[in-house]
Image (cartoon, rainbow, N blue to C red; front, top):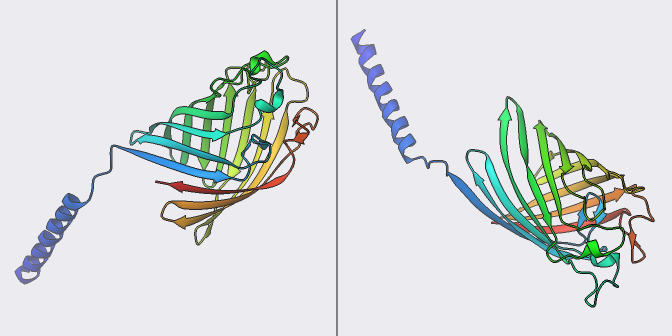
Length: 257
């Protein structure tokens, strides 16, 4: 018995010391992370509607995440739609060429389901859209909640202010269903369907869809190609003779660091 027991005890001790040494040398999980991203798209589409009159624009943002699940962030993009509503208000015309999104929330999990709840502010600094007949200030506040189970995510966003310059549209909402399929070799395929309900505004509500192929190019660089479309009312979503809800392909390139 002793001939068997002693080597066994020695082996167990060596294993325990090795495990302890490994635990001591393993890097501790960071309390928080700060990340950035910059990119460009051939057309900025939001909920299926072109924000840039089908022209390319630059985009970028920053995100802070704490290991507790709390996060805050900011993201910005060039836009065109506010200026396209008209050019006759005041000596300087319609102002508002940049969208700044400010958000904060909390992510967690219950069993196999992950959740995400938060607040999002769409800030169009200096916009004077409220001076245009039939419009309100473009700045918009939303609260949102999302649940992810497996590859599928369902998200609900609720406007607690007027929605994107539509007067008397408080309590509008957006439903978003999407999935994320890993195709291997850095490719992912993301189908999406959404429904935008705009309260108290005739012909403003619509559905949108997208099918996006993403490619991880390594070293923080990624590319995307998306087929995007809507059934949005053509007269309502036409500005400067451009129907901003028509189907199209959007290409993008982003660097994250």
